[in-house]
Image (cartoon, rainbow, N blue to C red):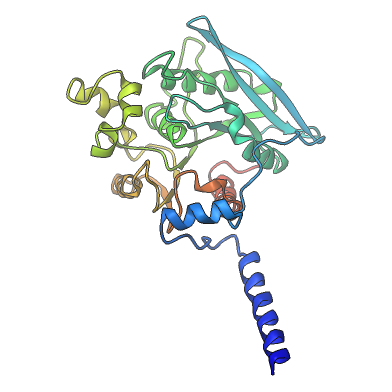
Length: 318
């Protein structure tokens, strides 16, 4: 009897293991009941995380620390990746890192940069001035200038300048939305180049800096350089939500319900406002996941699955 019970227990554990390790990436992975259980899963190793630092594969060409702009005696740099055997021009994916506008590194998105370079896209990641160097809108200007630089140098890197998407997380999500929502093909620089793009992917980025949570956040106050009471219009003008029209690029948003930094209601309202204005919005709200949830292997695979479809629809490869 005991022997049979052990066998049954063993088979049951195998079934549970199979259930937890085999996951359909098109289905949102099961989240956690609260942030405490999430932290326990992380501490015990039950929550599997993506690699964030690894050698660039042999088949991928890397252009490291290319200077795209010099300002305030600072050289701003970007990195570019593509398959070494690429021949025809391909769509460009520009990644903008997070870090509350005060920290973070363009290297942070290496897993996406390499993954999408392998998928035959041109990928780039951008440095911008942090808030200890300059206040908003310096960060926005840097991102816009990076887009223009990449378009102006498209021929050197196999870039199709008519098929560009921007992807950002947290503070980076805020910046890519601001850039994408406020630049049109008609807004050109002295060289006739616009910072407009054809698609946006927003990972848990704040869309409304006039929200109560945002105006009380020290990172937002430091970004703007003034309190909300001192400069409410600056907060409003720095909010992507108030630049939405039917003409903004299609937006794909990922947001977790356990996010303690950017409340999910911000993404709820963003999605509703985009739809109300006739813009294209694809919204994935993941139950039981926190800020930076795509550091999870399962969440990352889920996000890439829907990013793949989003890019193929809006900036298709030849």
